[in-house]
Structure formats: structure tokens, C-alpha cells
Image (tube, rainbow, N blue to C red):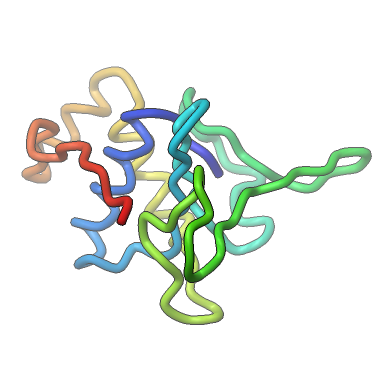
Length: 131
């Protein structure tokens, strides 16, 4: 799944805060759309209603999807790990990502939900993690 530009970075930072620093593997793209790719278990985004701004990558009849994945070490510009994988079977949690994306990307009252649970959008600064 991909969310572009600053919204993608805010979403990744929100997941980091919600998961205590380990949201699962997230890939950052430094050029073009500047997308953030959230790596989820296969098929976990299907049959769910995602908010505008979310691009799902699912296989379907007569459809092929490619998700860019950088090397685990070394330079792979324009791709880098925003959050590298920590275990072979560790992915971003689909329901947590769905709810966070609805809260962040939806028009109010979605953003009001963040205020209710104590999140302040201004505290989710976008920052460069490229090393």
C-alpha cells in the first residue's frame, strides 16, 4: 500500500508512535511521488474501504502490481527503509494502518478523532530519515 508525499510520512510517524517505535516495514521513495510503501501481509488490504490518498497493490485477474523494495544494506536511491523489517514474518498491521489512515486522511470528523485520543497533527513532523 502506498500513501504519497507528506501524508505518507505523517502516517508512518503516527504508526511509529502507536506501535512504540516498531510499526513494521515501511519503504520511503525520495523522488517522484515521494511515496511511503507500507508492507502488509498478502491480501490484507482487499475487501476493505480505504480513504482517498491510499493506493492499494493487490493481485487480481489480469492485474500485476509491483512494490519497490530496497536492499537491506547499502545505497538503493531513491528507495530507503523508513522502518526496516525486524523479522521475516513481521508486517505492518492492516487494521491499525486502516484506522490510522482513516483518522489522518479523512476530512473531519476523522481528524477530530486524533484530537480525542490525544494526537496533535503538529507533533507529527515530517523529517528525513535517509542516512
